[in-house]
Structure formats: structure tokens, C-alpha cells
Length: 435
Image (cartoon, rainbow, N blue to C red; front, side, top):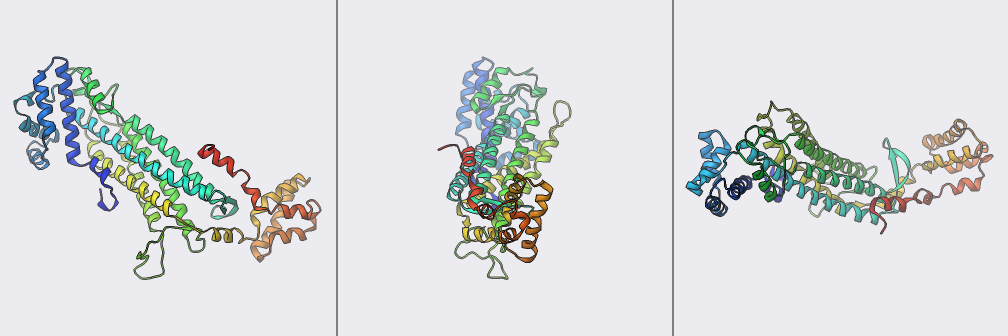
């Protein structure tokens, strides 16, 4: 985790203090469950909870023990015994390290998902607000980067809203998929621990029992989780890339907010660069990069190995912290995005009305002209606009072959910009619901 791209709430989920606190809760809840089943003395479970819940686990002490034991869970249990006293002999009975590690990881991933879902909610709110603000602001749509037909800036933002609604649904599904608890002992057979202990711990932690864990929680769950983060990151990049294109000097239809005192270049004082959107593009690449190792973690040897462990210690914090930062940065970009309707109109008019070419093509075919002939008739007039800067409507009106099929007054009516926006409300109703 790099502090520059980290937010405190998400970072706290992955800090050692949080991890050890979850480890303790798992061990203590398991002890309580065993006491309820008459497996260990109730007084011992009470002491474990009381002393452990009041203690502050010393990270440095655990690290020092691990230097000797070469085993992190044993190091923690040794430190816990120092805190609890003789009753610590009833801790971790019938359990294996994976029971603690995997259940803890899933608790952390669930908490991280909660933050990411809230991040998306903030972004959705910003997109909706700006979409309605510019619901009918005309702008040119582009395909292959070339002028196509008119759209509205509100529709651009509505498209982003719909995409991040899907992102939210995926995050909710990923959260649910990884929300499992495994307290099943060596090779997952429950030979030395009652399945009811697992159910009790799961309920206390807001999880659900893993149906079959083979000592480890199946890593297809985690692969889906990190793949979901990767898809969400790709959506972040798509919206950021749109901002970057729109801010180009030759376009300048929208740009990132440039704050007082901000500097765009160490060499050129005039520069106002889309640095936030470019940063988001880079961060999205990082998050996507974690999907592949998560998928490679699925294939473990037999019932368990630890080839996945080092991977998850890195990608768990890094992917969630990075995406959390990116989603909040993107929300800020949209909230403060400076929009230039005048430049949108100027760019829209730049090609002399060529964006109406399809409408003329359709009118000619409806007047009895074959599609190939109609296409040629429209294209030859369009090319005069491209190559000579002519006005498209003027050229069409002067083309007798065209006017023989479509009267001039009808041609003129076809250059009405509002024609392209007649279904904007329908699309908005689909995206945002009828309000």
C-alpha cells in the first residue's frame, strides 16, 4: 500500500492490529461455542474473552516470537497465552491455521467490499446529478474518434451511471460469494472440532459456513472477488479516458477542475492537464493486474498448500486500497467537472451538418432510391464538406438528383437538432427510473 493512493478507513482493515483482533475474535468465539457444547469449561471461555477483549495485542512482540517459531499463527497464540494465562490451553482446540487465516481474510474482504460499495454510491450520486444537469446539452457523438451523430452530455453520463450500477451489483455479489467461514480443522473433515463451532463463529462474524473447505476456503471465491475489482477498475478507466479525450485542447468540451494555486507543468505555466484522469488510468491497470494471480491461486495441491498465501497478503490490501482511492478520486472528478456547452455546440457544427447524413440516406431510400445509390448520392455531397469545407445542406439542395427525390423544404427540416433527442427521456427513464 502506497500512502499517496490510500485512504485511512480502507487501510485500517489491513493493519496488523485489525488482523490480530479478528484472529482473537475467531479463537474466542470458537472457545465459547465449545463451552456451550460442553467440550471445554465455560469459565475458561469467559476468561479467554474477558482478558483478550481488554488487551492490546503487541505487534512487535508477536513479530519477535515469529522470528523463532517461523509461524505467524503460533506466534499470535503464544502471545495470547501470555495475556490469558492457563486457560489459553483451551484456545485453538481442533483448529488449524487456515481456519483462522481464511476466515479472517474473508472478514477483511467483506469489510472492504462494504467500503467499495459506499464508494460506488458516491460516484453514482455524482453521475446522476450531472447527467440531469446536462440531460439535453447537445454534443457530438464520436465513433472511432470521428464525428458521428449528435447525443447529449447527459446521455454520456447516464451511460456511466448505468455501468456503475452494474459495478455495484457485481460488488454486492462478490461480497456475498466471499462471505464464508471455515472452522473445519485439518483437511476440512471436522475430525477434531464440531461443525456447530463453525456455525457459531460464522454467525458471530456475519459470515456463513463454507459447505466444504478441504482445510482452506476454495479460492474460486477469491478469484471472482478480485476479478470483480478488475472489472470495476476497467469501468473507472473508461470514464477517466472519456474525460481525458474531452479535455484535449482541440476538443475542450469538459475538463478537470483546476484549483487556485494549482500548477500544470514545471516548464510551461499555461498547462492545465487531466492529471487525475490519467492517474486513474494507471491505477486501473494496477487493480486489473491482481486478477490473474488471484485466478492462479485457485489450483492448490490436494487439500491445501500455501502458494496462495504470499499472493493474498499483497493483493488483498493493494487491490482494495487502490480501488477505494480510485473510486473516490473519480467521484471528485465528476462532482467538480467543468463543462463547456458552447464548445460542444461549436464542435457539433464544425463539419457543416454532416451529422445528419444518415437521416438523408434514409429519406432517399424511403423515396424509392436503392440503398447503394442513396449512399453514393449522400456521400458525394458529404465529401465536399470534408474536403472543401462546403456546407452540407447547401450542397444537398444544389444536387438535383437529391432534390428530385426529397424536396428542399424536407431537407431543411431534417437538419433539426432536436430530432436526435426525442428519446432522451425514454433512455433516462430506463436508467434512473420514472420519477
